[in-house]
Image 1: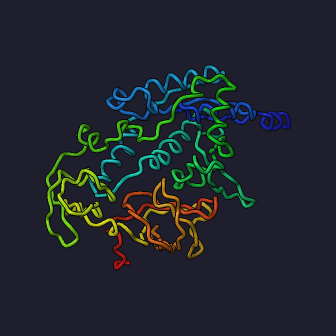
Image 2 (image 1 turned 30 degrees about the vertical axis):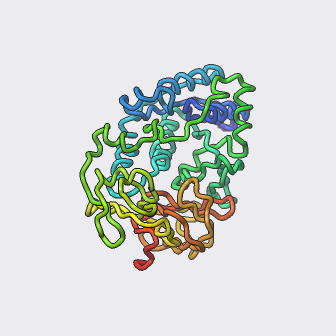
Image 3 (image 1 turned 120 degrees about the vertical axis):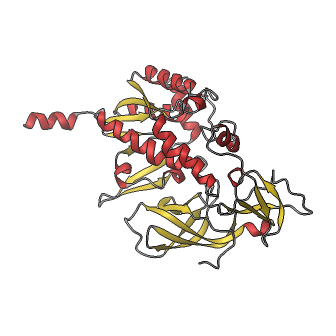
Length: 375
């Protein structure tokens, strides 16, 4: 009995490293080996085949798989390719289309992290006897004295990806490692170069992986998930200014491509799925200081103890604004910004911070910008 306990204590912790074929996941795997972990590399094949054929070198495409396999070979670790394209279609791509149909602007990266990278990957890790999963996200996990797991921004503020991880549960955080959390992007490239990995100088991709040309409307139409359907473009009084081919091809804050003649710039300020109307107005109509969140997730607590003073990021590239957040029943919360923000967009994630600590967040409900009367 004593010998078996000693052997268990001396066993290397086994980690399943998610390999996207990029420099970040490659460097993360190399660092884990350096830290003494036993590492297994895994790529989740998430793309439906018709998407893969259009973008050979994007996440999980054929070139990315070749790069990930090459990195694992160079590091001397096992490599597996796991096909989860059916689940990706259901949990991410279908969600993507459904949100646009409902007049919202989706955030597929958050959903992919929640359901695939920190859902399926953890399940696969258990099957292969791995203690943890690891990814190349720029974020940090901290365990408190009472056993609670906290999520913090990555040390490199320019590359911080904690926004996309706000919905992770305690059991997911407990099984996850972020080796790059304390590093900068240049640090990760240096790690890859020192290990002579082929991904060291590979360019990073910023667009949605399954919409490689950034034309999400064309993707939705060509995939057969959205059909053009004529509707009205109206101003705030309901006056018809023109027509469109479907609200799915618009998002709040959009200015270009409206096809409406006007003596002043017009912006999309609201989308009405019930009437298939696109509402336009002046830029000032985009400003609002309040929004309501649904399906909230909280990290430091199961439920917040009360009203919260924090910084709210209403989208990934938003710098954040001081806010007061009031939790509400049913997993909802009311966010009041101390100063109005531009284009608070329904469907986007609003993530809440105190300094570098991620408190959690939720999904912005469909409300007309600037409409505070309903609150």
